[in-house]
Every structure is written in structure tokens, then in C-alpha cells.
Image (cartoon, rainbow, N blue to C red; front, side, top):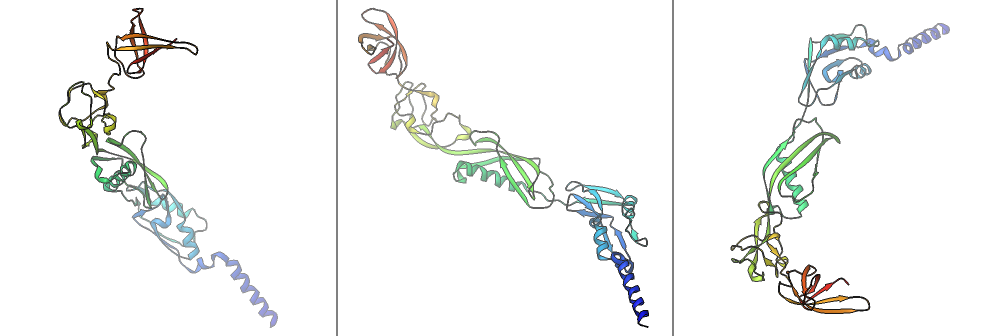
Length: 325
């Protein structure tokens, strides 16, 4: 009797051990129901994304991991034939023979998506300019804002980095590239652009000025202007102008530009000057008359009063020119 019990126990143990991984599969009927339409979040499509699977837990997991291909792009869709899906499932040798499959003729697979509102790009664009200018937002205005190549994105955490490829002043037409990342991966490059009006203090004429006038503090003042509509050589410091001479007449309120002023000549045509020629051991001076005008460091023509010859000399100060010895 004892031997009979031992044999029966050993037989039962062998049966359960032999069943192993498949014992649960035999007890639970496997049912796979494919949806006619499914929304996908990731880049790849698995059976679990488009089907309801019933059965043993380990078998459900294994069936759900069957790979069906790449997902369509965000906001797009693709269609899979039901017969092809069934062949993919039944090709698995470990699929129980009595599994029940309910599969439509075709399955429409769509990709979930998200989008970036244009206002977010505008806020980023304005913030970029404000940081680069290190100034108040009231000092500039953005108009004619455009966004190019914006579109649907896969779901996930969005990060946007603005990049500028050209140097120069941030005014007038400004274009930036927005590198859009989702979960750290670059998904899109968007071009954002707009017209930037910047307002800064510039030098203006406080009164009407005649050609050839030497500018004083009373002749100029600072006024707030839209420099995006002005030439690039507009002057923003009064110190740059005081003591310089006007090349052209100006009306009251005119904006001062760097190309309409010049340094007044230290020496004018007809001025008497001292001509200096010097070497380490010799110093020669002579009286001369300037034949042309010039400023400090300029080379001018000078007539030697003694020899009556014209020479080229460099202006040292308002009364002296130097020649190379």
C-alpha cells in the first residue's frame, strides 16, 4: 500500500512538472479581439495596442508583444489587413490551437498627437529678444509675426530651443529657428520671424543748423525714436558730435547720422605753418603755407616759403607739419 501511494504521488508530480509553463494556458481559453480603429501613442505598433486579449497572464503578455510595424506619423493613419494580422498571430507556434480570434477585414491605426500654439512661439520669440537686449519689453514691439513648418507632434514632453544663425542687431526683420524636441528627440525645426521695432534715445538737432556749423551742446538733444526705421549709422551719444562740423544743413528735429559730420580741419588752405624735418642728430625748420586743408594726422600739401617748392607733410598740431627726413 505504501509503495502504491508513492507511485501515485510521483505520477502526480511528474504530471504537474511536465505541464510547466502551459498548465495555465490549458485551463483558460485564449480570446483575441481586434478593434476596427485604434489610436497609437508610440512609434511602433504592437498587438496589445489594437486588441483586447483574454487568457493566461503570461500568454497575454506574450501575445501583446507581437510587433506589427511602425506607427504612422502624428495625426496620420494607416490601414492593416485583418488577414495579415491573423497570419502574424497564428505564426506563433506557442499559440494554443483552440484560441478564438475575432479580426475585422481591416484595422485603421491612427497616431495620437499634440500641437504648439502660435502664441507660445511668439512669447518665446519676444523673450529671446528681451534677454539678448537686456532691456524692458516696452523698449521693443513685435509685429508681422509668422510661424513656418509648425505641425502635429507625437505625445510627450515638449522642449523648444531658439537659435539664430546670423549676427547683427536685433531690429527690423528678425528670423529664428525653433528646434522642437519631444521627450528629448528632435521632431521638427520651425522658422519663426517678425518685424522688431526698437525704441531708443538718439541724437537730434535742437534747432536748424547751417552747413559747416561746429556743433555745440546747445545744438543737439536726445529724443526717443524707432531705430528700426532709421539708418544703421544713427548716433546715440552727444559726445560723439560736440566739436564736429556739419557737412550738410539740417532742420530742427533731424536725426544725426555719422556720415553728415566731420572733424573740423586743424589747418586750412592758406594757413601759415612750421615745417619740421628731424633726425636723431639734426632738426630743420622752415616756414610754409598750407595748400590743402586737413585734420590731425592727415597728409597735406605745403609750399616751402624759402625754396618755393611744394612738399607732402603730416599735420602734428594746428601750426606744425612734419616731413620724413
